[in-house]
Amino acid sequence: RKDNKQVESQMIQHNEDSILLERVKFVDEEENKHYDLSELDLSILLALCLDVKNENPMDGLTAEQMGGYLERILHQHDDWMIYATSLLERAWLECEKNHARERAILQIQALCDQHTQRLTMTQSTFKAAVEDSAPPQERLRNLHHIVYPPRWAMLRDLADRYAKLGVVTSAAEIFVDLELWDEVVECYRAAGKENQAEKIVRQRLAEAETPRMWAALGDLTKDPECFEKALEISNGRYASAHVALGVYYFEKGDLRASAESYQRALKVKPLQPAVWFRLGTVCMRLDEWDDALVAFTEVVQQEPEEGDAWANIAAIHMQNKDPASAYPALIESLKQKRTNWRVWVSKLYTCLDLEKYDEALQACNQLLDFRMKKNASESIPQLEEKVVRAIVGGALVSYKDATERNDAAAIDSARRTLSRVRDLLTRLGSTSKSEPWVWEVSAFFNDTVGLDEQVLEDLMKQYRALLSIPGWETDTVQLPKVCRVVRQIYEMHKQSDCKEGLIKFKLLLKGVVKKVQASYFNREVPDEAKDLESLLTEVESIVATEKE
Image 1 (cartoon, one colour):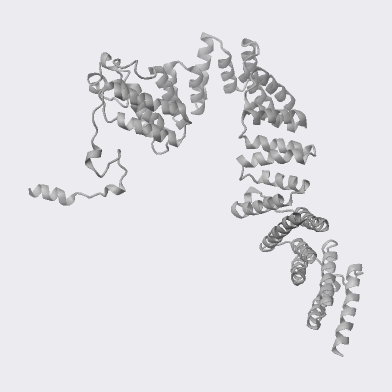
Image 2: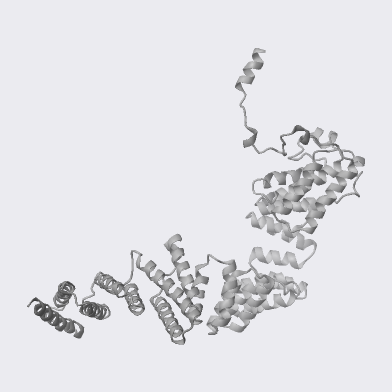
């Protein structure tokens, strides 16, 4: 009693609500009871489970529906065949789950090992392998009621799953037992055992020459003559050899020969979207745009969700100056490649050509989001000045046209576009590295829409941004810009008729003139600077007149 009390005191109490149980446990104990079913009933449940699998897509919901049947069947293990089939079906379902995949593959391994008396990982003793094994008559009793795969099919499925997990050496051993030499070679190549793979290939070729083995030898030795030999044996009907030659010539830089090899492969076997994609890429590099368009069109017909192919179709249409055809291809590409900034750049320029300014603004904001989230090493480009100017100018023209037509719906739409343009300019100006042209465009936009109080502020920000550029005083590009924005600031102060503003502007102008004169010491001052000197004289006279 003391020992029992001591054990009970050391036991850790677990809350069942926080533990994932193997089976559902109901509060009412009566509902937890299961009544034994006959073998025929269990076979019917298993058939209903397979019916769910056959009539529904293989997604999470279908797996849950099948799981209910399998859980009930696995409550009983009266019959070897029914129980093994249920375990196999459950293992196949669990292979789709990340946290249960390894356990499921071990379950399949155990089911495969039941067909042999060899000592294996899942039956490591003679008792488990022979004495506890079910006799043949018990295993075959309900064989015709259900669908149970043959041993070689289960082993091949197991090896394929090992290979997908990266356990390629174990997969190769199973493929050797099944004499699936093509898969053996692929596994050894994936494991980095090229010498062993080549040895097996040469052994198979010594017994019987096949196109696949010659092609495998070519992949291992990088010898194009092996691919030619494979084509010779197959009378040119082995498509993989043509593809391998295309890859070989592409790596050597012979694009024409590569394209011809791909074309011959597709003539033999047209349903190869990956090869069509390669052919399209090669044709683009050869400037054969029509052939490239045909190739990528074949890709999207066979694989509609191939976003890169849609993007390349759009690029070809843009190369052919056909933005109207490029636009729908870009939309399809973005459905699959939403985070590809290159596709967004293509859509931006296409929308500008088609005067779709709202979607161009969306593309601009998306690119700005990418620059905030991604690392600078990804080389996401900044918005170009000409792009922003085109959007601003196009939006203003659209609003003007709508106003002249007195179209209420068009005016309302144009106003929403102008609001989005203002948001974009505000966002561009809020960055720490705002370029002077951003404030210039913003001043132009605000002046056009009648926001006069904002224009002067934008011009002053443009002025400060220009003066922050080193060497602007002697720069033949920046100095005229400084002179122009200074004159624009003067015009704004002159219109406002504010004495205090003119006095501040006089000090600003005097500072600019002094900096330019200091930079051109003992040299002739440019005409733009001379205009500023005359403007300074004019401003000083106006200020002096107002003081009197």
